[in-house]
Length: 70
Length: 243
Image (tube, rainbow over all chains, first blue to last red; front, side, top):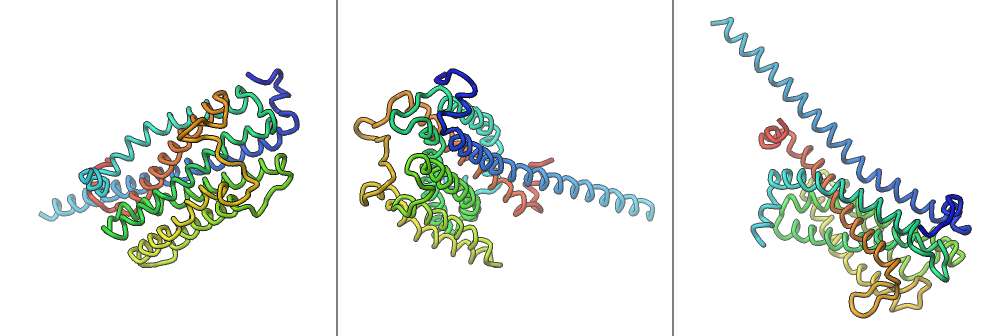
C-alpha cells in the first residue's frame, strides 16, 4: 500500500474529497446500471409465473366442469 | 460468421446465451472492479505532478473509452436493424443507449471533478470535453427517439439513422486533443510506441478498462434480457424456458 495511515487514505493530501467523490458517484451509477434491469427481470419473471399458475388453475377448473357435465 | 449473426438474431437463442453470459460476467466484473479500484486507489503511487487527484484516471479513462466504443457498437446495431431489419439489433440498440449515456455521464462528471484541483475549473469549453458532451446528447437523443414513436418499426428506423449520423462525432473526440490546442491531456496509452505512463499505473488502468468493457457487456445483456421478457411474455418458448 502506498499510504501509511487510513486518515492519509481518506485525505489524499487534500485531494480526498475529489477522488472519493468521483469514486462514490461512479459506484452509484454502476449499482443503478446493474440493479434496475435485475429488479425488472425479477418482477417480469414473477408476473409470467403467476400468469402460468392462473392459467393452470383455470384449465383445471374447466376440465372439472367438463367431467361433471358428462 | 453469418451463422453467428443468424443465431444472435434468434430471440430464444439469445435469451439462453444472455442467461449463461450474465451468470459468468456478473461475478468476474464485480471482482475486477473491486481489485482494480483498490489497486488504483491504494497501491499505485501518486503522480509526481498532479499528486493523488490523478487516481480518478482509473474510472475516468475506462468510462470514456467504453462510452466511445459503445457508440460504435450501437451504430453497428443501428445499421443491422436498418439494412436487414433484425429485431434483436433493435433490441440491442435500445439497451445500448442508456448504458452508453451512463458511462458518458460518469466520464464527464469524474473529468469535471478531476479538473477542479488540476485545472482550477469544474468545466471548460474545451474541444475534447465539448465533443464528449455532444456524445452524451447523442445517446440521450437515441433514448428519447426510441420512446417517441408508437410504431416500433418507425422508432427503430429513426434511432438507427440518428446513431449512424452521430458516428461522425467519434473520430472528432479521439483526435480532439491532437487537432486543437486543448487543456485536456493527450492519451497516455499508445498502441504503437512507448506509453507515457509507468507500469505501476498502467496495469491497474488496463485492468479497469477491461472491467468496464465487461460491465458494459453485462449491463447491456441485462437490459436486453429484460426487454425480451416483455416482448415475448406470451410466447411458448419463453414460458417453457422459465418453467
